[in-house]
Amino acid sequence: MFRGNHPAKVDEKGRLKLPAAFKQLVDAGNVTQFYITSMDGESAEIWPLPEWEKQESLLAEASTMDEAVDRYLNLTSYYGQQVEMDSQARVLLPQILRGAAQLDGEVAVRGKLYFLEVKNLKKLEESLTANALTAENRKTLAEITRRRSDR
Image (tube, rainbow, N blue to C red; front, side):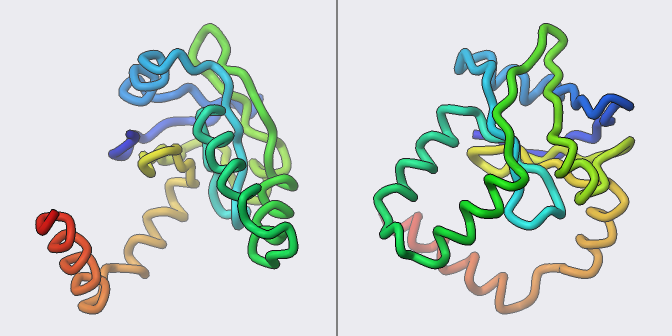
């Protein structure tokens, strides 16, 4: 599972070198193929291909007439591309997504359990300040962790 934040840079060709901590995890799983996409054009999601395929299987089980699934697939297909990590642990971010999410220069690469999220560092810092945890968020999280400890 991916966790934590690692600042990084996207080079002039749109390549992102995976931070060492995340590279160790993908190496342990023998992963070299990724699906890079977005649900909103604000950040990139880097999914190890086996995890993305699990996501696709779950979606395939849903009704093909489900509007939420259709919208999700529209977005993730528009922004998405399957890529291979090169010998220097770099992945090429899709050009459409780089432009939409302003993924050039300084970025934050954050673990989101099954995938990595890449966000423009300045936009992330602004978002974190504007979207602090509320009292209701804290209550919800406490309930989730309490249920887990009851198992």
